[in-house]
Length: 477
Ligand code: ASP
Ligand code: MG
Image (cartoon, rainbow, N blue to C red; front, side, top):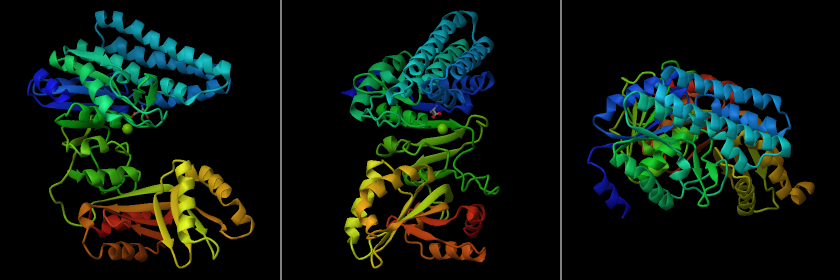
């Protein structure tokens, strides 16, 4: 039913969801750049725009919320001024007089909302997860309001839309997941009529709402995810993620200056790369578009003529084997031994239950059944929570020394080689090992899934830069 109303409602022009990140809307100049990009494409495609908050705004809002809940008033009052000033400055520079007269009061209202929320947190000395979501995503409401007005001032038809009217999520505040059926229906109902009238909806990234209408957020960096959720709901032709780099690179250019842009990567490669720390995409971005095979482009709003990277189901074959290298710097390795007292399946079941209870994903897992040892890597930031949970779960065994006291190896980096075509290509691990060995880098642990999409090596953090360079060179990336 939803599909029908779309095809009957819209012309057969392509529909592109364009998402602009924080740096791409970070100033009046950048926002004008966005308007220029959209004007260029308005002639041949329908567009839905998704915006992040102005660069730095979300961090500032979260800081303000925490200060407020500490009972401090001065710091968030400073943030209020800063929030008002930044948005006002853009409005002054880019909006026509008539737009200013409607948008400035709306921005002031949003600043007032910020103030009310912070006053509440200050009084209560507390901030709830739902309060945090409402406050931390206010930057998106402000930027969408402003951006829609800028587009109108540049002669385009545009309307700001709050994503709470489109994206329906569960109530996992701070890291909510979309409910796709509900989202599809609401998105069509809200955006369909605008598209039919050739109005560009400018939708707030990052936020959604529960079925009851309570504001949620999709996790830090979640505006990428907002774009693909909407792209999937609308059966968009493509999703374009405009950011501040030229595309997906073969490695982090801060580690490997010779890193180059990959013209095409597969959905699975993109997921793997973003999971392991490539900053270019929110890790869950690809999931909504994968099944429908909607292509996602990564493009640079600072360099719009550069084609960028296209993420598709089956990329045209590059050279076989390793395609890109990514790395996680701040990892720790945790080792537990069941000794002769706990069977391996029991050890594994109880350890993974602890991770489940803390909602922590492992970066890699290795085991030795003979030694009855389980070893896994997690982000350093998750260590305290996981350790506490493990100590609780194995309290009795540890007391009697049944489970080898949990061993934690800090300052570990995980280097990951990624590429669909590694599958069935022999010798890749050997070459990577060889390259590391020649540099005298010791591999602490290694893991490769049967999908052969990635191979992960745990090494000392201090070796990371050299390791990534060595592997990059070995595979001629
Ligand atoms: N503004 C949000 C953040 O900084 C969402 C985003 O930019 O994608 O996390
Ligand atoms: Mg981002």
